[in-house]
Length: 311
Image (cartoon, rainbow, N blue to C red; front, side):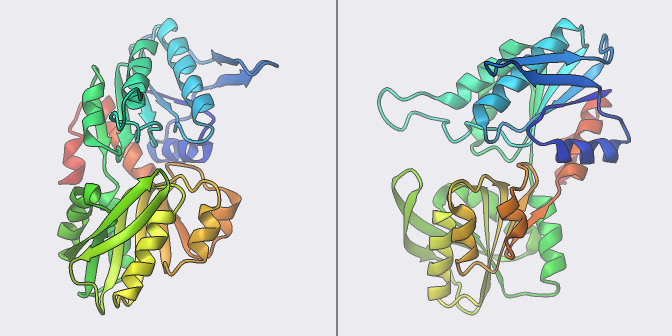
């Protein structure tokens, strides 16, 4: 087995490499003066089981193209099997046609990864489950719920007044999975989104008064939905409000917005590298998914069950 690192999230790749006790394969990934990407794999990969680790986060287009070029280099180097490991799968929010003459970009990206030569894909908390069907190659979709549950139990030990919150109707299944693991109640925020990045809290479905509320979601981008939900929960009598979000995109003024919000703490994973603003924010915490990703990689390589990770 060999691990090849893209440039999008080197700290995570190094942590996964350490967990597996396998060195990162030597490679050169650089840009020409016109920003074309050049890749050269220095280690021999002929007949090897190769895992390319690359989040397609900001800058999404550069990181995606880099992934495709690396996969092509490995395919032409006669790797036996190439697994694209995407801790964060960019373009996942474009999974359907919301209006006439709009693309389904998640399907396009799936086609590109397959055409480049990937044999399978490993990712974490896809925004929509149907994206698995966009690929004509095997895909393993890991869940951050076990990592979150473990951290919640450590931060709030012995507490029985916890309510898990889904920030919108679409995230109910994800929130319910965490609530079930915690033995906690579930509540749902009914919101209306007039346009991308702008939402208004309409109703809270469930009991949150005098409760410790934990919001569960897959992506926090501008932070507007999360902050509006926190205000609504505090207004409804919640004692404390926490948020556990898998992918901390945190674009624009999101960090400042969250720091100034009633959210007691926002916990994200390191599927996307933390910016200086995230590192300095007092109420934003980052958990590592390296052990989870490393275990999944090991199981794929040894042809053992990945789904049993979540039993």
